[in-house]
Length: 166
Image (cartoon, rainbow, N blue to C red; front, side):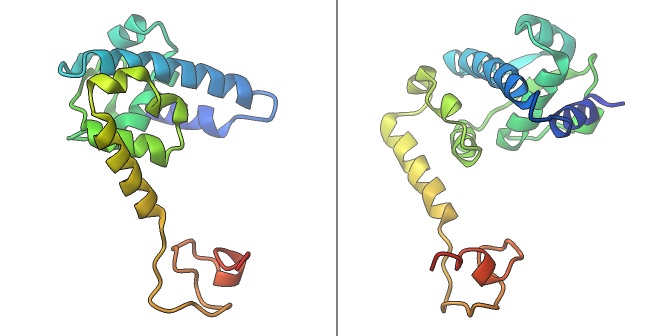
């Protein structure tokens, strides 16, 4: 089974009894890796998958989850299905996109890492946050009817989605 499938199985297999410990391990690992990346942001994080797991002293499946999470913020996405413990990894990160995506993932523990001060100015981070908030705003040409599809794209009727409290 591929590392990506093991990661997906681990995520989907969480129960009420295991979810808190899982997210604690995952968020601590993510924070450690992102702090390292941001502190030396001009240098790409590169190396053999297994060496990076050792460098960050983390579970290989959790590291795969980190790669899954950062992948959409890379200038060229990795083919995660092909990643093995022997794969060479090179992360060319678009830091503005990463900051945006951290808001999108509601990962306050990541967008508030102090090392962001070395990467993006406070003003630029505020602009990115405003772009994120603006991207969540749904604009409808006319107010949808109760039984119309919701303009947010959820696939639900307006009355069951954004119109629920209107």
